[in-house]
Image (cartoon, rainbow, N blue to C red):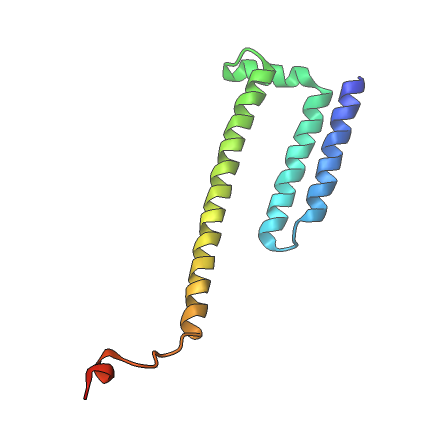
Length: 119
């Protein structure tokens, strides 16, 4: 019973931190809703772990903890790929921005090869 209370408290702390740290645009609102569903599922599983085992048996896994591990590996993979793609997109944006600034501030050369060799 103590572990359930500690796990639920940890989930609630993470939820409050997550909800306070995000912006308020549309996509962020969708992620907040999905996160709340995830948190609710986590609290439910902490309170009723036998239901996860029942679900695991229905999908062909021996234990509920194994099913949870498999789901977390898939979620971690998606998160890792999404983070990688966002970083690559940000890197491309910074490169384009640096190029645009460099071109905007570029000065024409003071002398050309033709004028230097002419008598």
